[in-house]
Length: 528
Image (cartoon, rainbow, N blue to C red; front, top):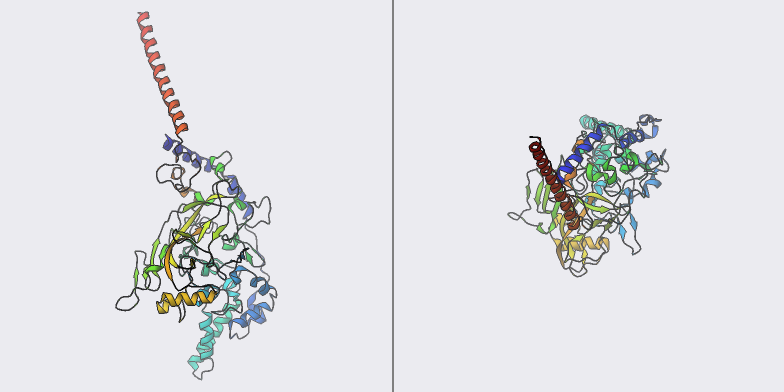
C-alpha cells in the first residue's frame, strides 16, 4: 500500500512539474543575464607592456592601477588560509591548526607541497599572483622566468628566438586579464588534496566544461553559470565557505533582498520552489534542496573515499611502488598508503545548520573511537538545520599515543615522509614546524571527515525518488533517528489503528456485498 502511495505521489509531482514551478520562474528573474560593461583593454595598459623578469614585478604592475587590491586580498582566507580563532586559542584553517584525514600534512605554510595552490608566485608567498584568478592564459610562470633568464643572454640566434618567444608568452599572459573563469577556480578547487576529485566528490575537472545532465546550472548546454554567479565577492572575500561558520546567516531570496549573496538555493528559488500546493514544498523547512536534487556525486570522475596511511612504507625489492585500480587511479603508493576510489557515490545524510565542528592538531582525541575530524552541526530541533547530503571520507592516520592528539607529518622536502619513509622523523619535523609537542610514541586511528555536497545538481527527471527515503529497506535516511518518517519507520499504535480501519472497511464491503446478494436473491424469489 505504501509503495503504491509513494508511486502515485511521484507521478503527481511529475504532473505538477508540467506546469512551470514558481521557484524556477523566480530563479530566471534572479539570474537574468545582465550586460557587463568592460571599460578597459589590458593589452593597451603601458604598465603591462614591460619586459617582466619575475612574478612580483607583474604584481607591482597590477597594483599600479588596482591600488587597494593587495590590502583587501591579504585579509582574505584565500591568502591567510586562516578562518578564525576560538576562545581557547585554536586557529582554524590550513594556515593554522586545522588538520584533515586525507593529505594530513603539516600546514601553516610549512609543507612546500601545499603551496602549489597558494595564490603567491611559485613557492614564495610574499607577493600575490593576481593571474591565478584573473588570467585567462595558463603558463608555468616559474619555468618561464627561469628559461627567459637562461636564454636571453645567449649569442646563439636560436636561443635568442626562444627567449623572444618566452617573453611574448609572458606578456600575452599578463595582458589577458578576465573576471575569474571556471578554470581559474578549478585549478585549485578541482584538484585539492593532491589530485583531481580527491577531496570534494562534487568538484573535479568534469565541471570545467560540463553538460546539463552533470550540472543543470553549470552545463554548457544549460545555464552555463560561472562559479562567480553564486560565489559572489565583496572586497575579494568570496561567499561560500561552509566549514567553521555558515556561508549564509539567513535564507533570504533575492526578491526579499536583491543584495543578498546568491549562495543558497533559496536565494534564487525561494523557500517554496515547487508548484503551489505541491507536497515537495512541505519538505523545504527540514530537507535541503541538495538532498533531493543531487542523487549521486562523482558521476564522471572518481573521488577518493578512504585513505589508510598506516599501510604506507611498504617496498618491493627495497624500492617504493604503486598499484592502480579499475579507474586508473593509484590505490596503493608506498609514500601514501592504501586508498579507495569510487564513482556514482550516494551521499550520506546528516542534520546540518551550515557550520561544521572540527578537530585541530591541538585538540585532545579519544583513540578508542572513530575520530570525527570534521562533522556537521545541527539537529532536528535546530530551526536552521536541514537534512543535507555529504561525502564522508574515511581515513586512518597517525596520532600521539601519550598526548592524545592527531599528528601532522612533514610530507614533502628532504625531511618529508615521501623522501625518507620514516614516520618518526616526519612526525617530529612536522610537529616542530607547528610548535606542537610530540612524545615520540605514535600509532594510527580511524577517522572521518565530511564534505557538503552542493554541486552536480541533476536534471529534474533524475532527482531522488520519494520511495528512496520513504522505505523500510535501504532508505537513504536510515542513519537519521529520533523522528518518524512515513514509510521508513514502524509506529505500532498507528499501524495497528490503520490495519483495524483497513480490516473494518474490508469487512464492511464484504457484509455489504453479501447483503446485496442476499436481498437480490430473495427479491427474485418473491417476484416469482
